[in-house]
Structure formats: structure tokens, C-alpha cells
Length: 285
Ligand SMILES: [Fe+2]
Ligand SMILES: [Fe+2]
Image (cartoon, rainbow, N blue to C red; front, side, top):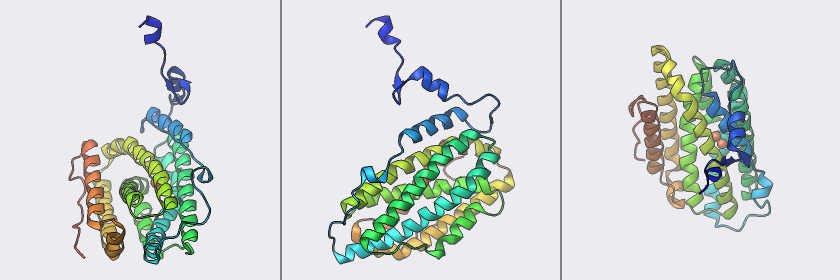
């Protein structure tokens, strides 16, 4: 191999890696509270992975499915719709506060793309529910989650930690739903959303380690308490879906255990140990 060949720059997103590194360099004087380079790279990745629902999915009639299955996917879809809708609106109003708190336009760049992702998710689930013959509606009992996650003290920090839970929970659910007894529209929808949710977790892996280091004793305690409440609420509410889950191959205990285990591993990778949070007991129905 010649010298020239070994030094040829790698291409990323169809551009030379040297140009890519230049585009991923934060502007001088930008925040030192976050890793601007990683955020810019994630922003570029997110922009390159944006997708149009009409390119990926067939918006005709759904293939016929047994009545019992249709009812189950409507119940799951309605909860998922509520959580995504709530996530979209919370993100919309927290985006400015987060980029202010972290003093970073890189955060604003990236979160703008995440907003587009969440809007796409709400749109898709809304369309899926309509095709199943149901009218999408927001289930108000979940509103308490967005209040606990983004209001009160330390709201930016608390919201980002809450998002770590909700994105992990959503991903664990989507992985199962994609593999469960579901029609092809539902399967493709879950696959598309899952890919986006992985990026959302990636964002949190970039900003949260630095944030944890700066937490005071009070903010740490506050966040731990609110995270316990959110997980406990989820554990409690998920009990009523036990039967539906069994019928389509989504085991509730397994779903919660995987989510909690992933969170423990993540906190371990942040350097604060698996026991950073107190996890609720998963009760048998
Ligand atoms: Fe989402
Ligand atoms: Fe998300």
C-alpha cells in the first residue's frame, strides 16, 4: 500500500473527515459545560438520519388482524401516543431552558432535530391508531409524569434525567413491539422510531456525565426522589397491561427489568455506580 493510500482521509456523511472535524468544532467562546464537539457530531448525524414517514411506510389500509389483537394494539398505541405527545410538548418548552442552562447553541441545534423526531413519532402513532379504527386521545392520568419531570426545582437537570428513563423505557418497549405479533405498518413504525430513540439516548450519554459532576447534595437528592416516583408510577400503571402484554408476547416484568438494568449500566458508565438511583420493586400482578 502506498503512503498516499494510507493517508487518504476517511469519508463521513459523504464528506472528507478533515472537513467533518472542522464542522464539528464548536465556535470559539462556546460553553464549556457540555462537550460541544460531540454534540455537533450528533447534530450532523441526526440531520443525516432524518426520514419522511411517507418514504418509509405505506399509508393505505392495514392488513386485517384478529379483533382481539386490534384492541390490544389500540390500548398500547393510546399509551404510547400519550407519552410521545407529552414528550414532544415538554421538549418544546424545555428546549430553550436547556440550552440556556447549559449555555450552548450546540444543545439548541441538536434538540431542534430531536423535536422533529418526536413530532414524527406522534404523527405516526396518530396515523396508526386511526388505521386501527381508534381516535387518538391524550390520557390525562399520565400528565403527572410531565409535571414531576419538568416542573419544580432543578427543572432542566430533572427533565434530562427523566428523559434518560423514558427513552430507555420506550426503546425496550419498541424492541419488543417490533418483534411481537403486530402488522407490518406497526413493525416498520416501531423500527423507525427505535432508531431515533437510540440517538436521543446518545445525547443524554453526552450531557449527563458532566451534569452529574455539578449536582449539589440538594439537587442530587431532589432528582433521585423524582426519578423514584416516575419509575414507581410506571411500574404501577404497567400492571393493568400485564394481560395484553402476555397476549402479544411483551412480558411486563421483563420489560421493566431490562429498562432498570440498562439504567444501572448507564449510571455505572457515568462513574456514579449502579446504585445511584433507588429502583422500585417490580410487583407481581
Ligand atoms: Fe419519541
Ligand atoms: Fe425520544
